[in-house]
Image 1 (spheres, rainbow, N blue to C red):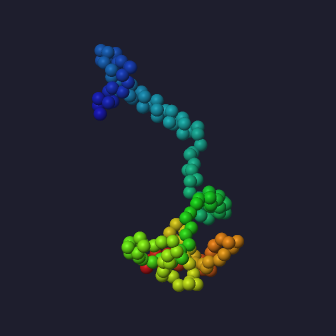
Image 2: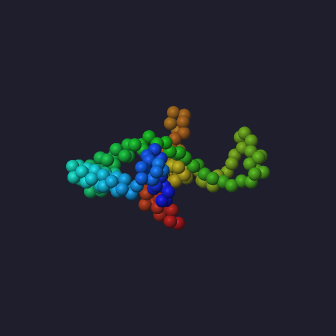
Image 3: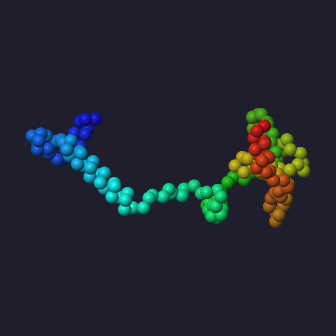
Length: 154
């Protein structure tokens, strides 16, 4: 550490050491005093620094507008929406025997509501509808956040 402090500036020679690359303690003291004077001048002439408003205050009306702007930022993020008709377990042997026209029995009954999942999390249930020759789902029950939390606790 002492070597590092003594060899800070290799281009400056100290005449007291016979041409060696060292900075005397007087030079360090002068530099520290100069820094203290510039710090005092900067703090007395500049207004007090204000903390950055990184986190919004919960009680302000402007925070609602800010929250809406932040919500607008995430509205275009794509999520995976899955409608699950049902599930089943079969052996690999039976899986390999499947062919065009094979029927796979699922655990869901006909007419039962289907699960709607967003990124793998159940958010709603619904029934199948056909609109312009395309399948769709009509939501019949939306899972509230409190219900989702209760299901996670099980």
